[in-house]
Figure: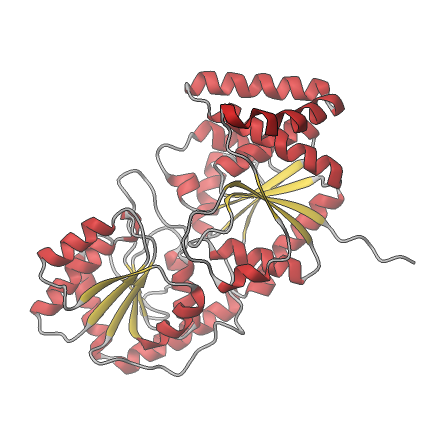
Length: 412
């Protein structure tokens, strides 16, 4: 009896690989390890100067969809003719719907997504792929929804944070995507409650972003003198790094020995640099730039505290549940964080870490001072944090849930 064919799934991303989106990379690698045939479609070319070493382990080829512009018409013409000839009625209906959405929004966005869907759709037809999965509820899922209209393929998507919370996100569009998706995955119970309030009939699964716990296992701590406060993330408002810098100024004024490194890159870099200088902290606080995961794994154990001072941005943007926070806890580093969105699902105040109010530099400084002054208590909470990560954030167990959902969708 011949072996059963491997399930084939198309993954649609806005950009692959992307330096800050290690969770997508880890998920694809685990799906491939379990025998799933993944085809990756990226709507943009990668722009990051650095890459994580694990990118080289991805077996799937990445198909980069051309930029939609007058100069790329010929690249889209052939695929669209192929899809039109195979499904003329659904093609015309989907094109008309895209035109209506573009007219309502007074932008070309919906028509661009339709163009990209046609380009991808021709390749899905040839490969016999009947289900697509998108990461983030924005452009990638818009393309997946148009593929459903063009070809009748089912789609699912993973909702993260900015893609569902930011004020500029159309709630009407998000509700339609929730309603038409075969299923939705999201990364915290907080997100599940939020999405179900928008569309009670949607099928939503909470699947935490997992880690390979063979790689992220506690290392012997290598504490530094003075103690290292470590933060990691994009330099954007929702990370709350300005509050961390202000808290560091208070620690300095209290004669608490420390140094602080903020790892990451982003649009707020110049403003944060200016804030460091304004508080005369250039000898204590450093913006270290982006760092690949393999280097971060060696940096985490040097930290006495990992800090995630996340906030809800002025535009509604916020984190879902920062992967770097899970990484730090997996490696046995004590953590201090704010109660934004899903963070309290992993940082239980006084048990697996310390929670402080958002946008409160004084409370953050108080918490950091307490952790530095009580290393035994910090180590107790860090050990409990590792146990929680093992129970809830194991990559293999969590991706197994996603794989089952994808395989069922592909078979259907």
